[in-house]
Image (cartoon, rainbow, N blue to C red; front, top):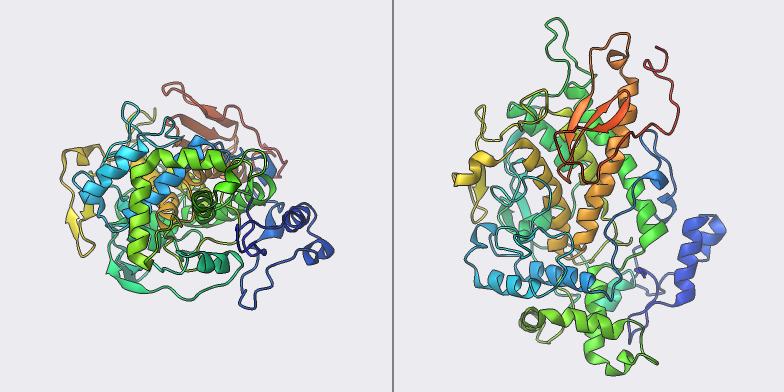
Length: 527
C-alpha cells in the first residue's frame, strides 16, 4: 500500500500498518486532528509532504462529481501476473530510454525486451498484433490510430505561435540520477527526502523516451492540450460550431475562446476525480517500490515462506522472473551505473515518484479529459454522419518526426496518409500518459485506465456544458451538439438530450442515455 513520506523499515522498506491506517482515516475525514495524527518520517532531511490527501472528496462545478465517474478499469493485485508484466514493461522502458523511437525495428535491445514481454500470458491493455507485442506497437497506446505513423504525436512536434510568441517544441532533456539505485538512497527518497535538482543534457525534439519523460516531469496541468488547441487551429482544423452561419461566428459557444477555456476548465474536475480514486480506492504502490519488493525477494529467501514470510512476495518474484533475460539486463545496467547488481528501478527523476498513489495517473486522467474535449470541439470528421475521419496529411498539413532529436524531418512512410486528427490526439494523450512510465513513476494501467476515467468525466462535462448554450436550446437550435470518437473506437453524439451511441460504429463500452445528475438553470431548461 502506498506510503511515501511515512517512516519505512530500513531492512524491508515496509511502512508501519498503524501509520498507513492514519492516512486512510484522514482521507475519509480530513479533520485537523486526523491530519495531525499522521506520522511522517522523522528524517531530518525530509522536505516532502503527502500530496493532496484532503482533495480526494472535493466536488466539481461542472460534470459528474468524482464519486460518480467510472472507476479506473485496470486494477491488478501487485503479486499478479498482470502487475509483473507491467513492471517488466517499465523496466524495459528504463533500458530503452535513450533508444530513438525511429530505431525500434532494428535495435537489438528492443528485440530482447519484446521477447521477454511476450513471455507473459497477459499483456493487459498493451496493443498487440495476433496476441504479440511488436516493434510497431511497443509502448504505444491502444486508442484508434495510435499504431499509425510516428510514435510521437504531431501535436508534440509541430511549432506554433503562443500569441505573438513563436514556440519551437524542443525540450530540456533530463539525465538519470543514480541516487535511488542503492537501498540507502531508495529509503531516503521513500522517507520524503528530496535529493536535489535535475541535470539537463541538451534541448531536443522528442525522439526518445528520455525526452518524453522530461516533458512530463514539470508540465503544468493542461499545457500540452492548450498547445494542441493552438496547433490544431493554426494547422487549419476548425472548431465544431455552427460555422455555416454567414452573419455571426460561434465565438464563445464552441468557437476558439470556448475551446481554450474548456481545455483548462475540464482539467480541474478531472484531477479531483483522479485524486478520489488514488487516495480513496486504490492506494497502489509506485514502480520504484514494486522494484524494491522484487529486490527484497531476491535477497531475503526467508520472507518467501508462505507461513512466516510476506504474503504474496513469493508469487510476485515468480511472476516477475518470467522476464528473466530482461532482469539480467537490468542487473547489468545498474551495475554499470553504480557498481552493484540491484533490481531497483532507474527512475528518471531524482525525487522519484510524486507523494500520492499510482492508480490512476493524474497526468493520464487530465490527458483523457482534455483530449476528449479537443476531439469533440474540433472538426475530426469530414461528413455529417461521422463516418469519414479528417486526415492529418491534408489541407496543407504535413507529418514530421525526429530521428536523433536535433531536427524535424518529413515523415513520408506509406502510412502517413492514414494518419488522422483523431489518431494524433489519441496519440498525444498516450504520449503524456506513457511518458510517465518512461520516467519510471507509473505503470501502463495507470495511464490506459486513467485515460478512460478522464474521458468519462469529460463526456459528463460536455453533456452538462451544452445546457449553458443559448444557441443549443430548442428555441434557437443553432447548435445541435458534438460527435466524439472515444478511446475504445465507438462514436457517440453529445446533444442537449444526452449522450447516445451512433449506430454505424460498434459500441463496445460507451455511455448510453447519460443524463445530467445535477439540475442546472440554463437556457435549455427554460424552453
